[in-house]
Length: 236
Image (tube, rainbow, N blue to C red; front, side, top):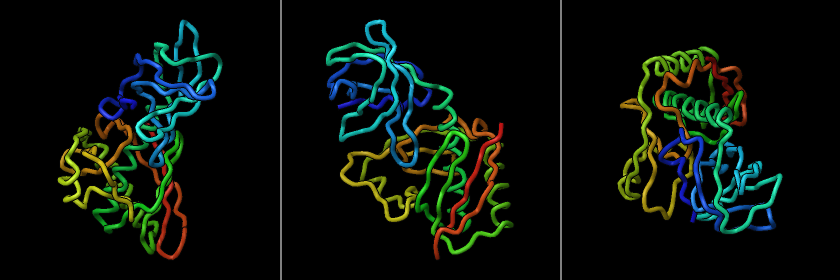
């Protein structure tokens, strides 16, 4: 079982851990990790593992049950090795800003239209989300953008709480993915933005809304009869 350090501290850039399993000489499971494992539309972190004084590249990270596997390149690694992990912080921080911006946009659209997310993908330079809505027009998108940036400008703290499963399931408004509800969990992680929003989520986020930067919706796409996609980027 791998302890996911990023669930409680998104700003951890380095950590120490022990290798608990190695498969095919390049897939290393650690007892703890700050590397985000690809999930929920957020790409995995990359970076390095320092093993016996050697730098190995971490090129892919994925969870398999309770274990988090790190695909490494550039050297050997074996069970029992003590390692130091170093994240590519530039990539991580861009994705943190993007993920927080996605929560802001999703909250604005949910409050305005009651629409849920049907798909999405975060990127370092641009991101996208799909919503179950019949129509967005440019005027409406401009209003969403203005409301989202007003939230950014309020410097609202972004915090993490953990709620027992039954308590969280009694709060349907925290689940923003259409037809997707968590199962068989003891507790759920809730990302809060002050009194503005709370969403069940497992990703990494910045400390407050001002760190997100300006949200700019750049594209609107029709993805079906009741599915619309927005694409956005972030400014400074």
